Every structure is written in C-alpha cells, then in structure tokens.
Length: 119
Image (cartoon, rainbow, N blue to C red; front, top):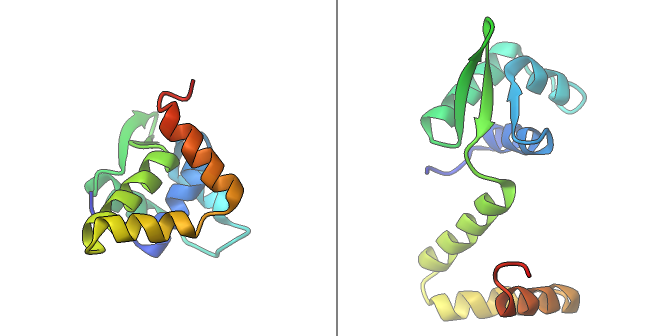
C-alpha cells in the first residue's frame, strides 16, 4: 500500500469513525463541519484510496459504498513497522519509540507482548 496523503488520511479517519464503511455523500456530510470540500473532491479522494488498496467499493443503488480494507489499528501498526525498516537501526528505532511512551503505555505494551492474542 502506498502512503496516505493529507486529505486521504482525513477521509480514512472519518470512515474508520463511521465503522469502516460509507458513501461519498456520508463522508461529505461528516466532513462538512471540518472542511469545505466539494462532493467531487471526496469522490476523487475515495477513488484514489481504492486504487491504493485502502478501500473497496460495492454498488448501493446509484451510489457506491466504500469499505476500509484495514482497521485504524492495523494501519498504525503498518506505519510503525515501516518506520522501523526505514529508520536504519531497527533496535535503536524501537528503543527510541519505547522510551517515548508513558509509563501506562509501556505497561500496556508489556501486557500485549506477554499476551499477544489479547487474552
């Protein structure tokens, strides 16, 4: 998957907040208070997200419903993995990341590593 652009990230965040699927009209309505964007701008952006592999679409009457391919957490994890690969010394990148966590976040990370299935 290619990296998200700024507007693509805004649209994906709204789509994830909406449960992972929505129409262009629904996204325009959700974004109306934040940004003054034309329907065609959102349509184009969501088409780009399909092309990049972030969304799929299904027909819904005369419109399309778009569906997120990954969850927000899966996307964030992929970004973290890519940062480790591109950051040079993966151990140092991981150490810098861990040192930047709050004590609560470090505890949650330890628990997640001890129980990777969430149980």
